[in-house]
Length: 343
Ligand code: NAD
Ligand code: WQD
Image 1 (cartoon, rainbow, N blue to C red):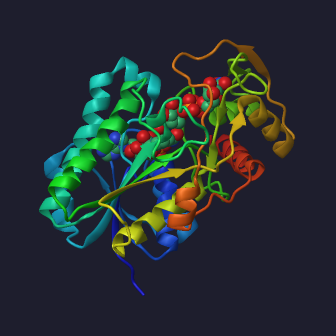
Image 2 (spheres, rainbow, N blue to C red):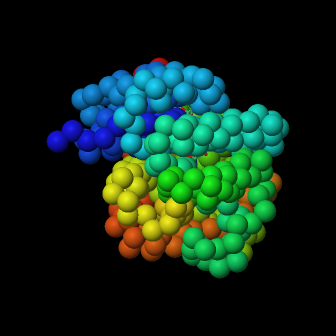
């Protein structure tokens, strides 16, 4: 049976590409809109090598209203939108706040306006655990207070959630699921798609794999004096394909009108917190490769510890992160080695 058409913005990006694979594997037709500001056309070949089908692709900036409107005219049967397209580097957002507000918010405003105008009511939005800041209670649940953002990037996610809430309040036809991701890691097991960090990685896992393969001389462990069992900071690392599968379920929930309120929030995490040092141990155990490290001071703006209570997503979406830490780190390592071979 032919399933519905889904518009995926940012679909050649890291999480987007893994989600496109899951959508196609579940029979959905996918149209990707991406301006390739942080991804490349080769990702489409990677997707096709896994699913056997190249998704439709339009190189468009979501901030360009007339180009986006053309998409809604051209593909009149779009049933849902998954909006990944955004700039995501926390440090860069401090340097270029206006660029972040423009890119992350104008793109969303355009999409919401077009959703109302073209009667295309279903939106899955990429939010982030960053909205919780340092939570008072752990594990963190969806009803925890949203804390003042520590970066313009984080603020764009908070404002975006508010914009969606207000748009739905005004147009009762609209529905949205905001997925609050914890720390997505790993790559598709085929190593046909994965994370492509631009320049020196900020995130832990790409830095770990680049150190293991010799691109970087050592990993700096930021902070050894946190109030955690080993003194390093704790996060909830979730396998990217597990995360991707939750988007397919969210789309189905919207299409079947099963969301209870206009706007719902779900934590996408494993429920298990791992310290930086534990991640390094797990990586060395999983791959047999040593990671040179140096313990240094805290990174500015970092929080001490956060991990999800994913029970609402588990019970309500029927979704659970299933991949072990060891397996997810192995996929990250396989991907790093595949990248080396491509060079
Ligand atoms: P990514 O940079 O790999 O993917 C984003 C994609 O969007 C890229 O392909 C980029 O070219 C595209 N893009 C950016 N601005 C655009 C625009 N104006 N028009 C069209 N395309 C545009 O990032 P990702 O890690 O896949 O993140 C996807 C989403 O998830 C983002 O909204 C991000 O903020 C959110 N998120 C990511 C993480 C994470 O750690 N990776 C965590 C929480 C939330
Ligand atoms: C994880 C841990 C670092 C690099 C960021 C954004 C967040 C979200 C995900 C989008 C921290 C430590 C890291 C290194 C290290 N993105 N670390 N050495 O900071 O949890 O979250 O990405 O929404 O908004 O802030 O992820 O991977 O950068 O860091 O010790 O070289 O690893 O200090 O404790 P983070 P991360």
